[in-house]
Length: 262
Figure (cartoon, helix red, strand yellow):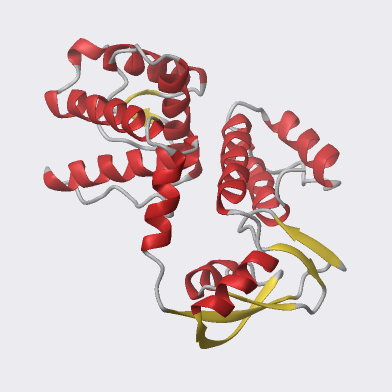
């Protein structure tokens, strides 16, 4: 499994553990903010690069990363203020938080050691006899567009493709780029053939998303001037000078989501 897949599973294990303790506030991976996903990916990278690292060492690496990003201690986690209740030495952490670090480490190493063939076989065994597809039409301002965010490949203006309904719902949120159409059922074999011709391999798409998450994490360390220069050099966009650093960062992230890494 690649590091994005591992980070996703580790995040969901942590979410399930929090729910068992009565904490139902943790978002799913799809709904998690960019900083939270980037933090999980960084944790996976640390454990893969340092397989003998202990949970205590993992927490120390997390502390150093958070400190570099400007986070401080706070009784309640507040992403806007960059405050976190776990911003403290490992020995002072409550027992449930230490358990999370052990679960994260165990999940990373268990998934990293899983043969790739096993994952592929499991995915094949879960195939359904029939799937539904939803039409999506590209209506963006460019004549052509390569969708790196959702992995649907190359588009020309006005082109319509059939994608899974859940994916169509996400794509249609970008109302200036995609328009959702009708939904219909088709045999799995036909859907699989269309999927092969229309989309890249799943692993390639997930690796692309991982690169996007890493890029967004890098943006978290940039000041306003750096973000403005990034938008200008990578997307030929001049951002207003009266925006705050957080507002400028949000604009740059929106460019990455819309056009992919450039």
